[in-house]
Image 1: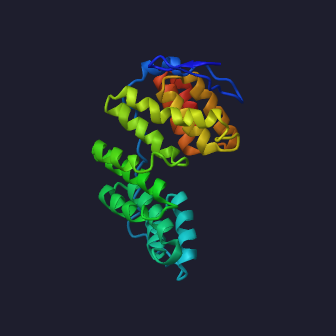
Image 2: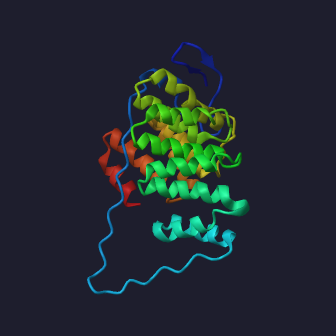
Length: 261
């Protein structure tokens, strides 16, 4: 299968494991910004007069505090997670703790703190790509799109920085630069074609689906999301991206089903 690019060049890449529809033919139809996901609902306040159990103190061992903080972050227990992650900001696990703390600060809307924490974490080669992506997300949330792109440019050549390149494409679309957005988004498609993203890589497959959606290839996007869900059922990010795809394609029934999952 051949894909004709928006500039007229031809690539011999194909969707080798499960052929998708021709993608680059649609690249000229790249659309602008993407939908924002709905925020989490506020939790009800505790009943008046009811004693609130104090959260346990973080472990003294920073490594244990990090693992506990990561687990609490996944469970959306943000105050407890933050206490544990801050207790882990020493020693060999410092960069990972900073990266997870930056993620928490982003989730809880403390964007300036997220950027400064991510900046420190990005000094570590191991966490540079992820921390830079978190910083870019925080800057994007503040409307600082050019600054966000500057952060992403620092890691765009890293083969494993797929999340950074996906975000780069989203922001370029948001800025109305359709042609520039094609390049970073297509790197995810190329990784899929070359089997760098395999059948068990749920995160990678979900990003391929998102990239295909942004490249205006909804059937390819849906196929990739199917694969992602086979690799890992119930992943929140995959479901949100898929729901956005259905909403954009005027299929609210399927979107509602996905949200309920």
